[in-house]
Amino acid sequence: MLKVALPNKGSLAESAAEILREAGYRQRSDQRDLSYIDPTNEVEFYYLRPRDIAIYVGSGELNIGITGRDLLLDSEAAASEVMSLDFGKSLFRFAAIPGKETLQGKKVATAYPNLVQNFLKSREISATVVPLDGAVEGAIKLGVADVIADVVSTGNTLKQAGLQVFGEEILRSEAILIERSGAVRDSKAETMIRRIGSVVIARQYVLVDYDVKKINLEEACRLTPGLESPTISPLQKEDWVAVRAMVKRSDVHDIMDKLWDLGARGILVTDIHSCRL
Image 1 (cartoon, rainbow, N blue to C red):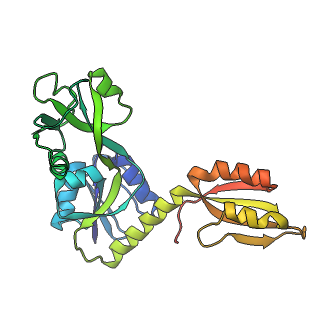
Image 2 (spheres, one colour; image 1 turned 90 degrees about the vertical axis):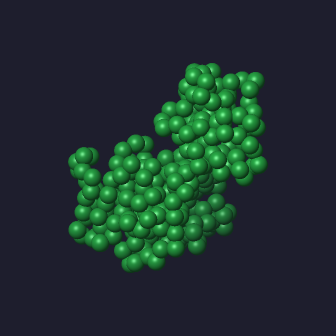
Image 3 (cartoon, rainbow, N blue to C red; image 1 turned 60 degrees about the vertical axis):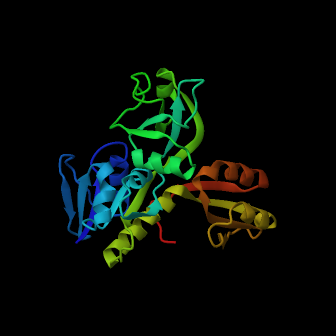
């Protein structure tokens, strides 16, 4: 039985469960359940605090887990990143009162003490890390620290606290799939990793179908090269062909505009739910 750790709550929980569903694995229906067995795939899921997942996986008690890159690095557990999952993205930065944006010799409050300490050490910056559990925006006002290190999204929370982001970014984090460092994967682990990877790729791409004149085919294929090459099929009109290719979802509207300008017609976009590439 493959044992897999998933976040029990928080920003990563629902997205982690959803990517497993899309990969063909059943998930709990009651959010209070601490574990759930998918008998068809012979997988047992454990729903744990996101901060603890890397420790369980690193110990070898659980085979695979989904957590944040920030949490993995902060845990210093014997676990390694297998792949990024393209959700739960966040940016870690330093912040301080305007005019006092410096790190050398200061006290830095954070909920990620090991992550921040290792960053400071790598930059040869001497500062005292103050570990806090949870929100750290009030640490400076309360005299606990001179600087904070935390997740920044819009920056509105920091502005409300009278703080200014400064310096080099600490880390770009996102949800990742992890396994124990040096682990030998069995067939069930290999299958899960392949399935999840397929869903990640499928979410990033769409299928584009269109008709184009043969005289414009070479230029059209430059716009939609696909992964290996586009699929080209003849049409009843001898001077036209049908083309199908995978295109990055983020680029699809720009490519559709360029295809239209080239003379392509019947341009259709289809979602890809899963794939094997």
